[in-house]
Length: 337
Image (cartoon, rainbow, N blue to C red; front, side, top):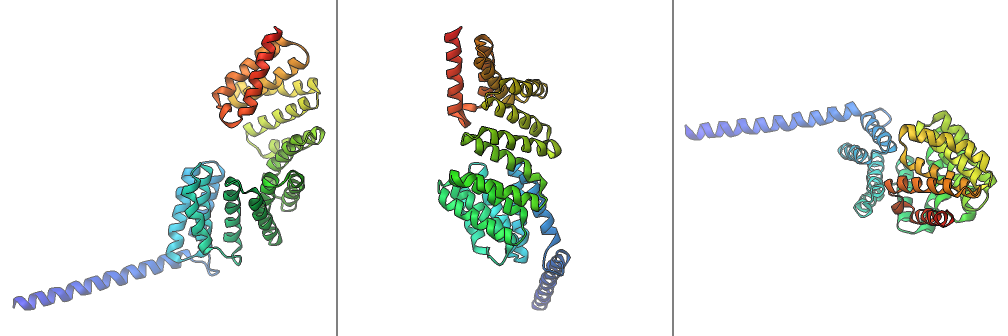
């Protein structure tokens, strides 16, 4: 009798386990069916990927990374290579942008395992991140070739936003003679695709490129175009910086009265919203104006205030050369007092 009870218990246990396995399988199958569209895409995963992209673009990289990791988990369940490639590429980029390049590199390698040129979304995303790793590895030539390839690939497929990103990166990593050409390519792509959100930064970066090459009049025109779009679509800080850039450009041209007309309101504005970095940079610009006009006491006072604010935002770390130039101007003004 004892044998019979154990036997029946075993049979009951096996039936129970089998029912659980079947139930789980049906549940997973139902979850996949709920997620899957007829065209093979998964709206739940796509929505999560969109949320991750939006979070990344807002600058919240740690949170974005955690959402991309959730995308990868769900893509693993349904074995969707495109979502896997996009998620893994962006996890790598999150590590890169937060200064953890080596932790991100294995994720880039995993993304390459699932990437295919036949998958435009995954392939273009991979190229954008791969090029950035090459750039940060001081392989600018390789990075430039990667971004050029990405541009051609995306432009041919009408993927305007990613083509713009590629052109924008060539304008950063390319040789000086390429930077203006590719900056203009990015602007053309943005205009043709009506990707208005890119036009302000593209014109702004082109302005810096012209400035680096000493083409100050063209730089001013580019900053004015950037300001037009910043004032249409940008945040308050974007607008403030755009006005500062125009004043800065007039200073570069030696048109100090015009520069002051832009920069004095920027100073008051930055003080009102406590924008310390650009308050410091504006103090420096105003100091340059007073220095040019031989008002050395006023120049000295502006430079000292600039040094205070720019020290507070760690300028010696992100622009050591510029900070040393500011200190040299303070010393120069001290000698003239």
